Image (cartoon, rainbow, N blue to C red):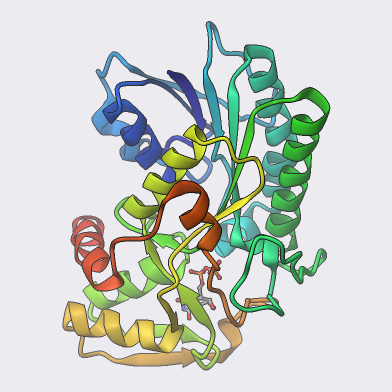
Amino acid sequence: MRVLITGAAGFLGSHLCDRFLAEGHSVIGMDNLITGNTQNIAHLAGNPDFHFIRHDVTNHIFVKGSLDAVLHFASPASPIDYLKFPIQTLKVGALGTHNTLGLALGKGARFLLASTSEIYGDPLVHPQREDYHGNVDAIGPRGCYDEAKRFAEALTMAYHREHGLETRIVRIFNTYGPRMRLDDGRVVPNFIGQALRGEPLTVYGDGSQTRSFQYVDDLIEGLYRLLLCDFVEPVNIGTTEEMTILQFAHIVNEITGNAAGIVFKQQDRIKGDPQTRRPDNSRAKTVLGWEPKIPLRDGLPPTIAYFRGVV
Ligand code: UDP
């Protein structure tokens, strides 16, 4: 296949490029680098099957030649990033999705949208199944991301229904691993960075909010299977290994041997921060034969090793 991956210089985009290249495909990576980093794809320089184009996908996209798949992964994706770039976040979810869908249609390519567990907002149903419609505050600080992705899902389904475009939608739950940006503000890089510097970990609120952290390799496997299958409805990809943020802080301190402990930052918890998050991933099991294989305690060491190199 010849595939276009938007957001190719980001955390997930760069791992996707690696996977498609490893499978023998040819990859065009596209990124405007507002939150991505070319370091993430530096190892691909000189690979004849990889080509990088610096471009903002909210503008018209031109790609020479045929395409078999378009994977739309461009977007700021951490709360700090989308608070910093709220308009770009809305534009890449809306205009960027429109442009990438139009490109896929024009090329006769299959389309995969990177959606998110944020679709469910601060959920009133737990765990979250794909048929739950969510509890989203459109005008809250996280609204720019949540609504952009909700619109992107709606537009993707419209292209499928109206044009018969082959589309796939993945709802990605919290994912961690090498190449996350140290300063992206998310809990995994924050805690590991703090632990490696011997600082106390900053727990926002009282730490009772939960998340379920999946290792990036598990996600990439799910994405690859999803693209190749024939299932059009959204599919959650995430682990059911749920824990409180306080428990997670203790695990990071334990594994890194950080003796500086924890500080609670009540005021740093942003409005609308979901209190619970855990996927019901039974659809992925049934449709893709996929389930997460890498428990947190196996995924953290390579992640910590990566951050050691950048701290
Ligand atoms: N969080 C925290 N300390 C930090 C960063 C984040 O306690 O230094 C909390 C945050 O309030 C949220 C959870 O960790 O409840 C996960 O936040 P993250 O930014 O990683 O992503 P989210 O899952 O909210 O999109």
